[in-house]
Image 1 (cartoon, rainbow, N blue to C red):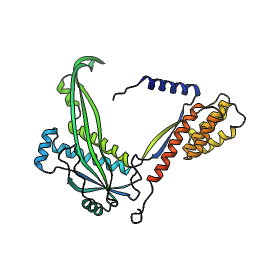
Image 2 (cartoon, rainbow, N blue to C red):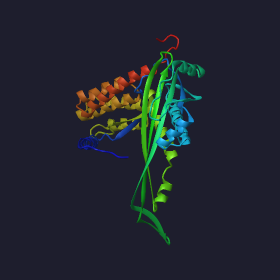
Image 3 (cartoon, rainbow, N blue to C red):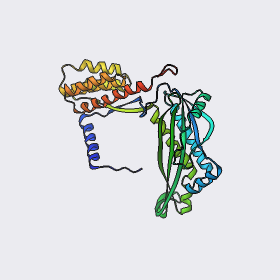
Image 4 (cartoon, rainbow, N blue to C red):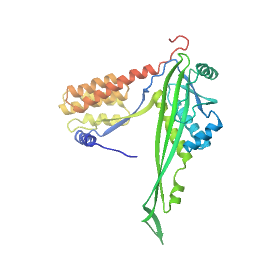
Length: 361
């Protein structure tokens, strides 16, 4: 995996590390939160049927496509099944939808990266009725490729001489395989006769291997079929996060101690054993009469405590006090973060509403 850092990014990371050292904010709490999806699916859609629409229009076209793309039919079929299985499993991990898998495999586009014409609404309605579903989610096209590059270079080899084992460098081969997958999805709403979403989702991944000979290195490299399945699973899981709220982990730092106020560390110890209500009471009780810096730490920690307990408005109130009353600068950014979370919560509540199939307009 390649990472590119600008000077501004490096400066920001160094400054953040400096703040952690200066303020002593080294304790962290991990929270699991349900976060909204980028696409808001109508609330009357509660059950979705997944349909494979990648069946070739004819065997002749399938052969032609295989010649053009270099994909064998069984490789494509297995990768498609892996993509749909990953999509189904990921959607099932969200509390938003019920998911059922269709038995049918419908014909789709001629070539993997071209969307076919949308399904007609009669077919969509028939599929929805057959599986007692509110919407039809189709995988409409799928293509993959696997590019291998190689180079000669020094590699490490373990040798044993008597009871001694050591590593030496020898001339060998290094190979890389890059798999790319393009998967096109459509979500049909038969009630409103509307296509809720259409997107081609692309994923790639890199594998590498090395050996003393090129043949040895290639033998250790992942196969093209396995690579297509793996990246297909990534595409399926990735698309699921677009339409369904998903659980995510949020890490939040808080102050572990103060040189002038032992209540900061006392509350932090309570927080470490997940006694956040007691921690908040400890910090609140110690708040009056202490110096500005310790007061800011206490107010900031109270804000984090309320966030852990799910009270975002109270968390925002106390984070705001940490900045306005005590001058804790990082609390200002924390307030902005909480504003974003509050907006997300409003959207999430909308996405998690259960609509009435018969009455909803």
